[in-house]
Every structure is written in structure tokens, then in C-alpha cells.
Length: 531
Image 1 (cartoon, one colour):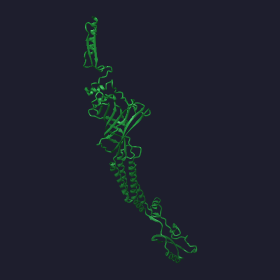
Image 2 (image 1 turned 90 degrees about the vertical axis):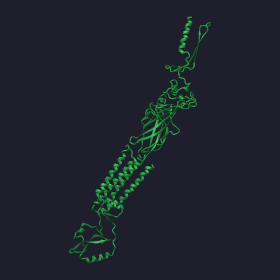
Image 3 (image 1 turned 90 degrees about the horizontal axis):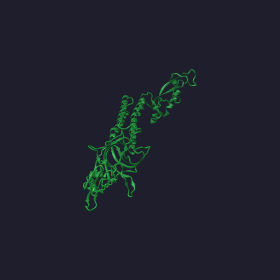
């Protein structure tokens, strides 16, 4: 009897532990499992052995301690997601394992797409620009597939940042990033979608300030290529590989407007970066990391620079040539004009150069500035040269009135040389009496008088020293009458006064400077648009 009572007490303790017809599930929060059991106790007859028959039927096994997904259709979305990401099924610290058709483990492919809303602040001085866009990442996580539990559902499970925190997501960073942030007003603009086959799509609206290594050799006619690089931070190519989407990997908003540049298009690329001890770019020291990048092609709008810089500079250079139409003795006017144009052009150039970063190489704008300065400064130097010639007192003797002899005589001035018939004029011929001009046949009592008389040769007036003896006057007059019948040769030398030389140089410069400037412009604009 005592044994029967003990058995009865044990049965009731067991029944109370199992819940005795606990068709409604008992939630064991500590074990994170739901247990459903159906139990029955059958008493044996009195004439039989003192024993009780207890049968317990469990509708859900609790061996794996995982929540059930059999009634997924009746579950709410949050409950379904909670059971899918339960610790017994899902580890958000470990990337998903993907197998190919042969069952071999392969790296997980992540596909990216970038949609750009705004590009702004393309600053040449800081070598950076700001971009706002939508970044989408797509990958397959078989652990989140729920099509077997909900075969009739086609809509994805969608959520914002809370859902993203429950999942494993790839860590992608921008290598040329200066600063970045996720946009949003009350909450961050993040959207995560889980499709029935386990495909995960994350969308993030972000703003990033990126470095752009610009080249200003052709400034302001330059074309810039601003590159944006996305790279895997933690996982190398054995686990994760990045790819661009096949259709429209990089696209731009149709209303996108740029102030200083014109958007030509974009290029995208996929590559691998090697990280080691000499080139450390990741948290892990060594490995090959997958990279995807896109390059924005930009060309600078030159309308502002043509109107505000090039055309005014051409006008200033042209104004400096007005001094060629002023006489060389008008020193105040020509000096003021030259200095004013030079200072005006320098001030104009400085206002433009302030927008450009200081670089070590020569730019096209600096070539333009240097040549225009040379032209303006050259007009000042030309004035100083002709003014010096204007103030000379001696005429220039030229063999011919050609550019060669004029330039040569201008730089090497000398007095006019007077030719004589058979002898050179000396100071002794200016004396009124000379004993050296006596004829050898004359006696010591004869007197020789030297008389200077003007003689017209070839229509020009010159002085000719003639020595006439009183005893041979008749003979001399007879010889003069015979010589007058002969035609004397024309003079082969020409003479130009300093004023004539100055005016001649100014007339030449009126054509040399404009023609040289036109040639320079032809070469300059050819290099700009053809190279």
C-alpha cells in the first residue's frame, strides 16, 4: 500500500511538471523554446499489478532548442524575422557560406549600384568634391531563405536600421573619403529587404566628401577625372568579392546641374588591391581585397574665363600698342600708357589665379599670363629704345635704306663719312695758307692759296677743297671746263636723321607686335583644343 501511494505521488508530480494536457504552449524564456505536449494517465484495474500507464506525446522536438517555423504563415513579420535570426540558426558575426553547383565553397559575390543625386563643391584649391547618392548592395544569404516556410509569399521582409542590425552586412568603405554621413531627418535613410530566396538588398542614402586628384596643366581648359573607390574592409577575396551590377551600375539624376564643370559621363571598374606590411590599407595586415570603382568625367566650362579673363587681357595688350602711334618724344603719355596697361593686366591675372591651387608645374593660364606680360613689357622697352635714338644729335649713314642696315646702324651708330676725289679731307685743308700744296715746278717766290668752294654733285650740295695756283689759273679753268662735260657717278650712301629712324621703328612695330600676337594665339588655342 505504501508503494502504491509513492507511485501515485510520483505520477502526479510528473503530470504537474509536464502541464497535463498542455496543448497551449508553455514559453520557457530562459531556454528560448516553445514546448507543446499532450499527456494522458490511464489507471490499471484493481486486480492487476499496482502500476499506472502514462503516455506523453510531444508535437515539437526540443532537441535543437530552436523555435518552430512550421506555422510561419500565421506569424507576424517581426516574429518570423526573429525566428529566422535566432542564435541557433543565424550568426550575424559570420558571413554566409555559398556553394557552387558542385558543392564547393566559393566566395560570396556582392553586387553594387550607385545612383548620384547631387555633385557639388568641386573645389580646385582643396582637391575635393561632395556627392550625394544612393548606394545599393545585393548579396545572397541562404540562412535567411524562408520560401520553404512561406511558399506562397512573394513580398520581401523589409525594415530600416533595426532590421539591418539583426543581420550580417558587408563592411564597405570609401578609400578616398574625407568625410561621410548617412542622410536622414528623424532617422537614417537605410532600407533592408530580405527576399524569399535569401537575397538581401541594402539601400543607404549617404553624403560623402571625396578627394579628387586633379591635374591643372591645361587650366582653365582642363578635363578632370574624379574617382570613387569602394573596397571591402574586413574580408579578403577568399570570402567576399565585389562586383558592379550588370544594368546601370552608375547613374545620375537627370536634373543634376554643375556650376563650373560639365558632366561628360562615367567609367566603372573592378580590381583587386594587395595589402601587405609595406602597403597597409586595411584592418588585416595582409591579403587581396576586392575593389570596385567609378570615375566621373568632367570638363570645365570656359565661358567664364573667356569673358572675364582672356578677352580683357587681349584688349589690354592691344591698348599697349597705341604707344606706337605716338611720337618718341612724348615721354609722359607713352610711359603712363605702358605702366597702366601692365599693372592692369597683373591685377586681372591675380584675381584669376586665386581660384587655383598652387602647383609645381606650369599651367596654360600661366603661359598666357607670361606671354601677354612680355608683349606689354616689350612695348615699354620699345619706347625706351626709340626715345634714346630720338635724342641723338648725329645722323646715321647707311649703305641702303633697308631693315638690315638701319638696324645695324642703329645699334652701332657712327658719323657720316665724306668721300674725296683722290684724297681725304683733313684739318689741314681748312687752313687758308698751306705750303704742302705747292707744286714742285713752282719757285720759292710763288704763293699758293687754298680756297674752299661749294660744288654741286648729283644735285646735292657738298664742299670740295680745291687748290688753285695763281700762276696756273688759266690751266685750271681749262681743265674744269673739260671735266664739267663728264657725268660724275651718283653717291652710294644714304643718310637718316635720328627722328626718321625712330619713326621708322615705330611704323615697323605697328605690324610686328600684332602679327606676333596673332601667331601666338594660333599656337596657344591649337595646343588647348588639339592636345
